[in-house]
Amino acid sequence: MILEPFVPHDGALPGPVLTEIAALHASNRAFFELSGDFPDPARITVEQVAASLADELSRDGSEVFLARSAGRLVGLAATLAHHPDPASDDPDPWIGLLLVDASQHRRGHGRAVAALIEEHFRAAGRTGLRLAVLDDNPRALAFWRAQGYTELRRAADLDRGRACTVLRKPLTAP
Image (cartoon, rainbow, N blue to C red; front, side, top):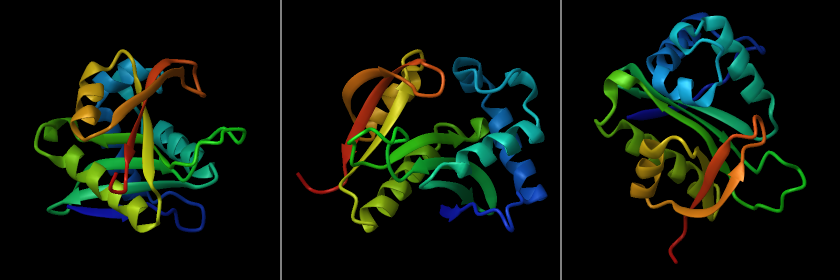
């Protein structure tokens, strides 16, 4: 598995890669039906994904990573170097989104991407990593718990007020 940063060139999102990313999003219809991130999860368009990525990348400290296996895009992770609320005293970076191509679920790609993101932040000297899981997504909650993340609290997400469980994993030895 190779994890590469997604960096737009001169502010533009490259067409062929954007098409791959849109197909990855479209494969995850069930998740987007839960999240409400797209108006019609059965018809996610390249333009909608481009707007979503541009919004994500406009946030201070955000990074998007593409995960490839045998040259094929199998996953995407969006991270934040710090909590998106400037008033927060939360010291940890966040995983905002981890998507794996739905046809590739249960093959270890999600676990591999999560481990690579953890190593990225560990190498940067960060001591923990957080994320929020929608409360109506028990499969995702089970996945993250299996990766060693533990519940910190229940909260509403900042963008839409959706009920979430906030989880954290220490990146250093206890």
